[in-house]
Length: 446
Image (tube, rainbow, N blue to C red; front, side):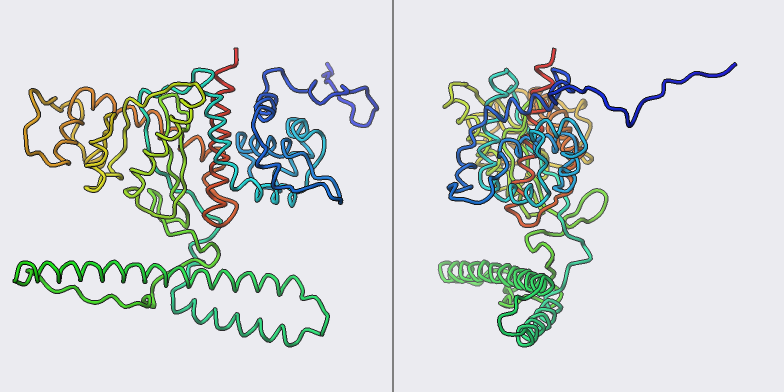
């Protein structure tokens, strides 16, 4: 008995729908993102294009913004990947209006929205609040390491940087001298010139860091000397040694992306950045910040202030919200942070030690009675954590911000494509906007 198959036709002419929208379901994510982008206020972004004095018309910024946000939502973030998707995938063709932008156009557009993207995050947050998604019962703050567009192997010591810088400058002078009069220097020379700039930036970065350390050390020595004069006796311990103004020869920087740093993760070391997120109980991102500081401690108060500002902006738009509590892990535990957060109008819970070192939370005995006098800020914070409310509140941190970190990285934001702190911050913020819109889309679906 012979088998029968349904055989399609690949070369036969057929009548196809006149509109790309007919290919997409009514509740498709691409349709939703386009509806949202049409509501966004893009006047600042449009101002970056200047006047229409002449030349070829630019591609619609709304279409490009929709393509980039949808790309972040489905895990296609690179400019070349977006160009290919706009050519081959119906959802992307729908968003760009069947006009296929090349990767250079998409890359230039990313450069234009670098400064405006922070405002777009606030607009996406406002849309989520209108749908009842921004539940501020508890906000959670956490940091995650993201890879830079640079390799660990590209790091150079200060001594090596000085030698490479001298060699690159000499080679550039020779190329200029050999170039014929009136001849435009080629692309190879332009790349060499760009590398020379990055070498200079990497060397300057090490020198600036060393100068800052030396200045801080000098202030410490002066304070010590003043204290000795005031008390009339020398302080115990060895006198601090002078810190040289020039970096050590073994100090390292990365000339590929001078703003990036060596970051320690659970899986080893990466060349990257530290991305900070403030997230609501509904896993909606309130605030974002990307820094090149490996430690989270200095980001505690700034991230709380960013979250408060985001809530204040919602209130100004007629969407009253109040932060009821905040939870942060032990990475933010520092004496300088504890006193200010204990004075906040809402309770802030910061773990005093890493989760793996904490004793079983279920075995903790909640403190009773009045708080004893004379407790240090650390003891007060631990007492707040040991209460039943504190235990319940801190437990929510693992259900809110940590899953968001994983979701964003799964969609491609764990590896940055552009270089420089400002550009990385803009791209990661765009990924956060896409995350919020994805949550809103799922919330509004029947």
